[in-house]
Image (cartoon, rainbow, N blue to C red; front, top):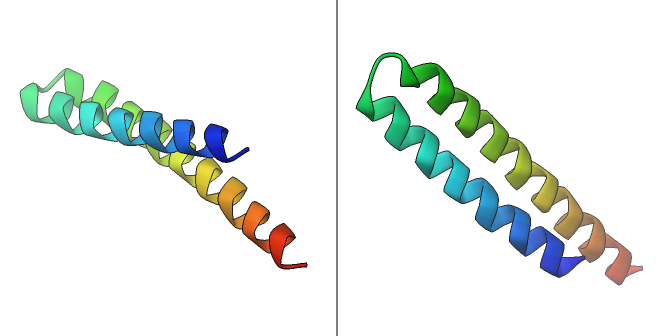
Length: 60
């Protein structure tokens, strides 16, 4: 579970950075860059949820 969360964090961060670079490049790519940023944020949120759930389960 921790490996999956770490993988999702890395992929999400890479997608956010790629989206930001695409938004800087050109006008047509702004929409694709925004989509990549949103997907990256969603992956980071899922990874954070998995890590928080694991930490709460370990406390019990």
